[in-house]
Image (tube, rainbow, N blue to C red; front, side):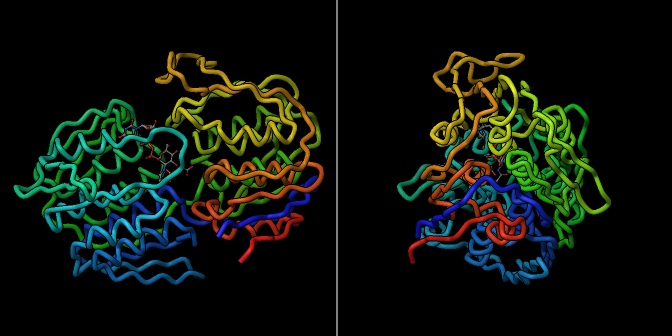
Length: 441
Ligand SMILES: CC(=O)N[C@H]1[C@@H](OP(=O)(O)OP(=O)(O)OC[C@H]2O[C@@H](n3ccc(=O)[nH]c3=O)[C@H](O)[C@@H]2O)O[C@H](CO)[C@@H](O)[C@@H]1O
Ligand SMILES: C=C(OP(=O)(O)O)C(=O)O
């Protein structure tokens, strides 16, 4: 069913809401539970689609999963893991990219794994070559079959040396989840070090793994013979928190985000302040608001942690349409992450896209045919329009744009937003947004 929201914009979002565990951590910690010989308990789990997809996949593999949704507590018992049918995995892989991370744990437990077609946002090619190279380096055999990619490791998995061509979040997690039970030492260079990965390292350490992280992006993992279950509280979602902060700025509002965690958001907070947004870090969250003065144009580029996160970019661009002057955004993580700006332009924003790297240095997409730099000229009044959301963060941006715009918008395809934003319509109501769900049953 195509979910459609009719939004009457032009009203500042005001109030308070709570963010829970991170979309980019919780599903990975759920996969880690497969490695344990005893049950695991994960707390602060949000009710989002990606958690649902991974719960279904775990159940298909024989894990008993219980989810207390109101408390956000997930219990996973992996004592009788079994190989699921390929067709079932395909049918349940859904819109998420997480199924690829089942490889290492399943190879250790059962000697084989299968990768279905992966979902995730359509914001670039999103190849999986680093994942496959990493699994091969551990000794796994990767075969393309008619039914998809089949991985096996009859002779076991062995510690190895891997250098990632780019600090990929997923490939770092793939390597961690495989190395913890491989025989011997693994050294991973040029690893991603996002806070969500550090929380996964904490989970694995609780399970019995031996992992050290150097300041130069090198992670060393000493394989162990067995791992137990864990009890862990997920770190909070810094992308959701930044999205609501951007919504406050774009609509001239004032939002207290309970659960927002300053140390994971330092780079975002610096940028937010440079634009002219105000924030106040409190004991249990961060208040974000538009102080009433003119917003300032900025130049920024997305990057791997500790740079400005790519997933923060799309919501913030909506706020930049309200800043004075020319803002430049250079997207260096995904080659096609500006598709969402087409709808903003239709709503009155002035945004030009360029193939050139309009940043401090050329990125991987230099001299390629990707419009990965944007020049935003503001401030421009936004007006309501009928728009179709393209992906998770682009969808949230469209919602913010509709809320900031004068007049009425029909925003279609908002279902995808539930992949990463828990109860987003209830939260909009808490913030006094004027909208109605006009989805046809
Ligand atoms: C579920 C999840 O956690 N998703 C996050 C994860 O995605 P994900 O783990 O998919 O992102 P990666 O960090 O792997 O991707 C970064 C870049 O590396 C490239 N690449 C990646 C793997 C590979 O085998 N080959 C390759 O070329 C990608 O095309 C992309 O250009 O990190 C991204 C970067 O912070 C975030 O935007 C996503 O929200
Ligand atoms: C790109 C994103 O996620 P995924 O990797 O799940 O598509 C995102 O969360 O913005």
